[in-house]
Figure 1 (cartoon, rainbow, N blue to C red):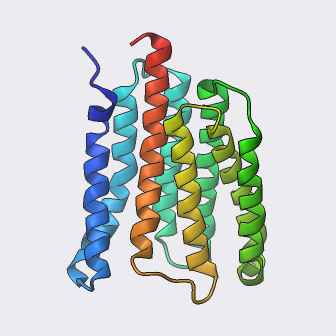
Figure 2 (figure 1 turned 90 degrees about the vertical axis):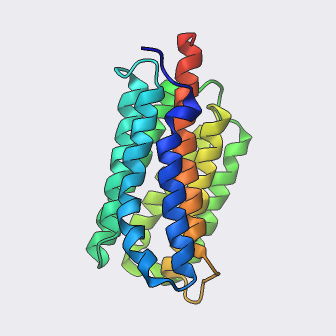
Figure 3 (figure 1 turned 60 degrees about the vertical axis):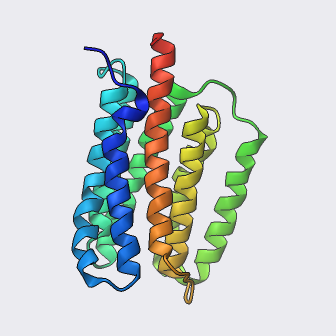
Length: 224
């Protein structure tokens, strides 16, 4: 059976993302009924991205499917656990996303990288230092887990620069999303209108672009 185009394979993920973002936007205008949609649609996002990746790949039994799929599954666990109240829910969710970034880093370094790491990666070193410095006065005992998580995220985004441009952009959007989320959670008085919308827009975009870039790379190397 002929595989669909990459963009067509990710239409379910794009639709799920649009519905989720629309619910967040409406919720931001004070429509309480939208809250009932935000949670369930959030949990549909990563399954839709996984479907798109597996559907678009020329070979499902591959290293790209393995590491990309694991990254998406751990991201889904992170989404679910971060929705749980309390510090333990946060730590477990952080752990889920930490494992997701480790999987994405392995995906990139083992399967997608096409050039050496350049000086542009230094941007993420500077980002990590600034991010930790901003959160340090407010994070308390969570600073060390956050700093370790930031290293994994920054490493993933830095090595994404060695892969397809969609992967590189996806890694950058992931950093933007988590940076805003971290500032929102820990820095007092950090707030801007529709910040949840921006966080999820960059997060969904990052996830879809990483998966799409992986699929494009797989098709090119397979000659499709």
